Length: 355
Image (cartoon, rainbow, N blue to C red; front, side):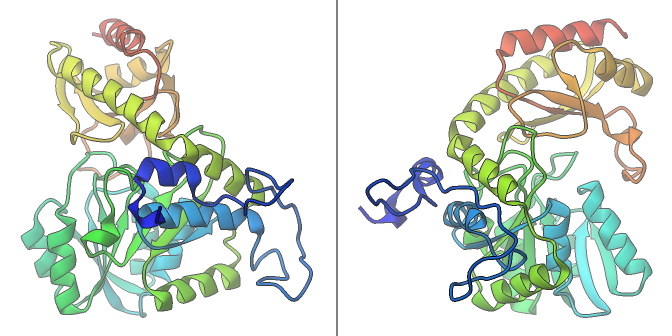
């Protein structure tokens, strides 16, 4: 059977395994070493590690390109931004991950780039802003408003004008969307989230199907030292093995919770893009009540991270730097794999206690 004919769930389990030799390990071992014996692909720990290879192999196969692991999702994004020529135009969503927007604004303030923020749901606005751009950065769904972009349409227009397209695929994962197949040049992940799935590591990745771009990114990682740890890559690889079953369960929970939230008189608005594990909603009692609600829930954990097996939530505007166009009372709920009725009972009780 050819590997290209395998389903994504099979690839998640089977890719990146060591060669099948008698007495050999089933899983790629963790290699704790700052130096390797010369003569192989790498001889220094900042240049390569066998533990990186398994993670990069499985993620690359899932996304349809070649992956590079980084120390965090933020450093992965920074590596892509490093490829933008000085003074060039970068187009990005008005609403996006706080860390990404912070990086872009800092680069713009230093005149390293010209930043144009757009409504990513309006392909016309994005395409018009991208006519002389070097890079179009897309989040879809966006964080935290869960807006969707027409990646294929934007990428086609960017290709005609010469702009590169990078897509943050953290929320969707390659099991729900493969941006390289839609015309993107780069896919970026915070592998700390759904890919690893257990809220225990910080890790990032970039995937591309361009050999030239891959070499440029690898050079940036090597030079700047934004390298992942061996243990983090091993844990992320283990997490990916169960991505499909975790995602199916959490998505089923998210769909049901969104349905119940929309029908509740305690909820003013509830957003869900139809896939993924994230819901964004506002309660009728207002922002202060929303903050209290998230702090006193018994089962859903008050935390800023997402994508783990446990459900977490927070009011996003409590964080400095969040765009002012994000509603003050917006709660981002990352749905886990707990029993959905238990989750709903906790959410409903938390809402009722502050109304």
